[in-house]
Length: 241
Image (cartoon, rainbow, N blue to C red; front, top):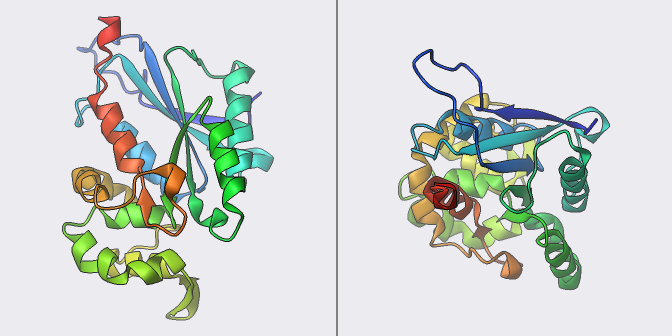
């Protein structure tokens, strides 16, 4: 059995008045973080109707379990994605379905650029790569109106450096400190960060002011999370109609 637990809106809490439509296309998210990304993407799944996402689409979050729960290295995520794809525990049609691997690129900032490019080249053959540099908190900050001009751009050098800083009695990364100052939330401990999903349109628009090219993210504030979310919202599955 694949080491994952699946979260989806498909065939859950159906209304007696609503006919369940068998999905023709699946988007699967598998993420580096154990909490923050889980809360965020599960809420996105819950809000599928609010975003007018096609009923022909199923969005599923693949939660790591057992000994794989703490896996965060992108190469390990890729390995797990391949296992899920081939295990038969999820319905995956390579002609139509998409596996999305979500991770932070900061792990590669101090490594040889070739190691990152080689990994992206290999993983993107069968998966969609969704990344942030330095981390997912950068994407979360974008949900706040005008946060790019007021917070991100004035501190861009410190954010990409992302050193450890003192925050009260804790030591945390700089980008997390910026997010916590703005939101009052601890992203790894507070499930209410999922409430930000309702403002994802802000994030999608402001993300355009960052680097979106995953092949050229070294030393650059980068995110393509909003692009991938927008692509799912815009996918009307016309080929199946």
